[in-house]
Length: 298
Ligand SMILES: NC(=O)c1ccc[n+]([C@@H]2O[C@H](COP(=O)([O-])OP(=O)(O)OC[C@H]3O[C@@H](n4cnc5c(N)ncnc54)[C@H](O)[C@@H]3O)[C@@H](O)[C@H]2O)c1
Image (cartoon, rainbow, N blue to C red; front, side):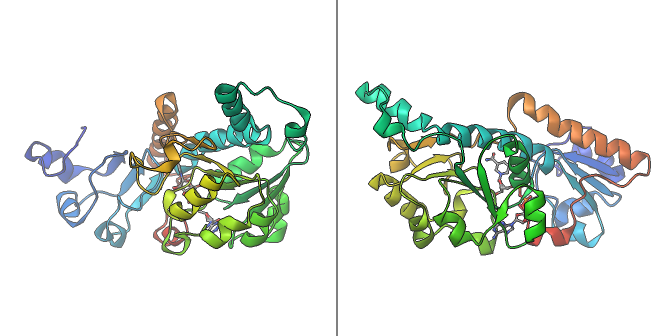
C-alpha cells in the first residue's frame, strides 16, 4: 500500500501489519503516534538521503533497522562538484560573464593563472560526497587536499589527497569545495575569519548546506570581488529575493539541484529495492544507518 498520511483511517489495518516501510522525501515523521500505529514495523528503507528528521526516538528505542540511499544520492552531488571544479579551474564562469556583458575576449594577462594543471583543490569533509569527489578527481593533474577531523593521514593519502587542517587548506587552495554535514559543531564552520583565509581569486563551491557558512560574511567577500563562488545551497531556501547573491556576477547560483533529480531518482528507488531483497534473503543491509552515526553524519 502507498500511504501519505499515517493517521488516515483507511490505512489502519495495513499499518497494523506492516513490517517494512519504504519511505522518501516528504514522508511524515516516524514519531510516537506513528509508532503506536505500526507495532510490527521492523525495517525502514529510505529512498532518499538523511533519516535524521524521519526516525523518532520511539522507533530507535525499538531497535528499528534503518537504511538510507544517501550513498546513491552522493553520486550526482559529486558529479555536479566535478563539473564545477573543472569549470572553475578554467575560470569559465568569469570568462562567460566578461564575454556576455563586456564582449571581452580572452587575453594572456588574464589567462596566465588559469587552467587545471597543478591547480590546488581543497575538499572539506571526506564524507560520502567528498570521497566520491576524490575518486572522480583522480584522473586530473590537480593537487588535492582534504580536511576532516575524522580522517587519518594514511587514509587521506589512500584517497589521493593530502590531509590539512582546515585553516591551512583554505589558505592554500585555489578552489575550495564544502562536503561536511550540517551539525551543531559545523554551523558557520566557514566564518568571516576563515573565508578571509582563501587566496585572492579563489573559488568557493558549496553543495553541502548553507548553515555551514556565515552567509553575510561570504556575501561581503563576493561583493568585494576578491573571490567567487558556485553555490547550490544557501542559508534560507529559496534564497530571499533581495539577496545580493542573485545579482553578483562572480556567483554561479543554482537552486539545490546537485542531489538526485529527474532520472537520478530511480537510483534511489533501486537502492531501496536492493536493500529489500537483502532483508528478505536474511542478508545484512548494505546501507544501514545506526543511531550513533547521526552525531557526525548528514
Ligand atoms: N546539494 C544537494 O542536493 C545535496 C545532496 C546530498 C547531500 N548534500 C549535503 O552534502 C554534504 C555531504 O553529504 P554526505 O551524505 O556525503 O555526508 P556524510 O553523512 O557522509 O558526512 C559525514 C562525514 O563528514 C565528515 N565530517 C564530519 N564533521 C566534519 C567537519 N567538522 N569537518 C569536515 N568533515 C567532517 C566525517 O568524515 C563524517 O564521516 C551534507 O552537508 C549534505 O547535507 C547536499
